[in-house]
Image 1 (spheres, rainbow, N blue to C red):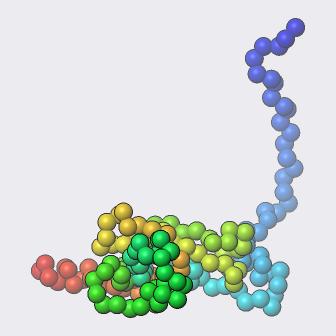
Image 2 (image 1 turned 180 degrees about the vertical axis):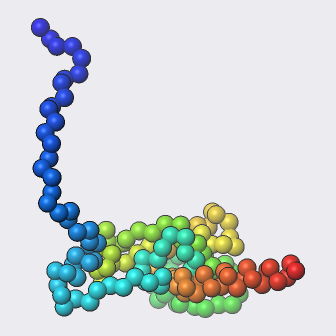
Image 3 (image 1 turned 60 degrees about the horizontal axis):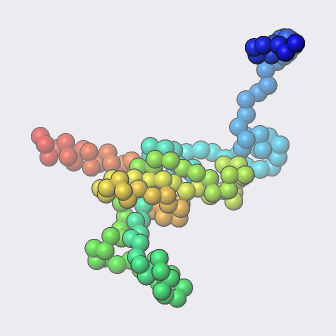
Length: 162
């Protein structure tokens, strides 16, 4: 006859109690312990990866049809990115909130010297449509500077209201 219902659960065998819990170490700390000559990474507010919720200054680059269509040679594209124009064409430095971050090379540890990060940012003075993933190279100032600018702006607004 065919049994009805779900198959019986396997018997539960208790696991032996460990004599001592294993030490909790992070991947960079474990790598540093394995190689005593390697310097230990120190995490500060300004070291990559920046924390979610931090405020940074980012160079915003306006996309143009010239760059999308590939209608120019590489040197003019590099000149366009390197230019520091003062006209109001959408380029500039903006305060941004870090929404998310991602490792460019997920197979590498965070403390690895070749690891790079991309950040999903919200430009504080722009519409949410402009939120984007940016490479770390577009970060103009770290969170310590960005957070200080936000505090100074908040203080200035409070003094104006009084």
